[in-house]
Image (cartoon, rainbow, N blue to C red):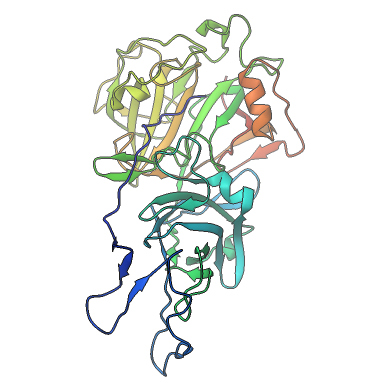
Length: 423
């Protein structure tokens, strides 16, 4: 499914070097360094001094690391507690560097370790159509999508530490070796209570075709809006309803009525007022994405934004054209109230419901928040991206029922096939 995404952005960093020199400081206490392929074989034969008593050791770290937002732990249907967040890496040196590994840890335990293909799968350079690989040019930045997990509440840390392994063109002793294992500032864990809500749909056959926690279209939708990066779809779900034969559609692919979910009721997940609504956008032709013809507000098609309390806003998108339930801004909804019909409007290539929780009423200029459904049935799981892609092309989805059963207070994960209460 096509998620709600803004276009790629290219971020330019201020120049850090002039004539090949990286000046750490203008004062004489810090040297001017020549870093990279043209660096001298050695600056000094004298080994670096150890930090004295009461001093803090300092390390040259060519890559600056920060988190877009603090991770919020939440229990998934895989019975693991997930920390989905984004690390942003910026090469602060005038040399090209290679990112060899990224490790997340807490209390001496490794929570996630990425290197090689695993790292390449979740690291992206803004503006690069091919992902950009694992090298960063001078001033260039990249995002690494993290999904650290623990097994129980008792293991949820207060902070997550990171080690980023960077390879320079050559060593420059005594300042640094060719390979630098750099420690970064720890990222705090936000232990707020997540929203406990009901599902936005009823009945059986609902597939999470695009969600958390791998680098799906939703997780990858980190967009530059209003002068900063936002990740509104961090925990978003694209819902499609499957036929009894586990197919996405039955009939012509370009006919919205071939999709069993088209026209199904979409319901409020909790009590709360409507804060935004649009209902006059036309249906797209199924089977084809609209292309770069939409304004930012049109990406969601017809949608409803609902304030469900606690700083949580529910976003229901791609609804059918027409305000069939005569809703208006300010109207109070109760959990289970109908608010629209599943449609195919906005940035979509097939009828589906896009649903997510965010920290502001703005569908794109917001950060996505995790949530859990208080009760539902997990009917099985489509366990690979290849199987999801095959299903989107018209083949029957292959569903693994090993972990099927009743679930409570969990968030769905990409590939989950579910039945929700009602009808």
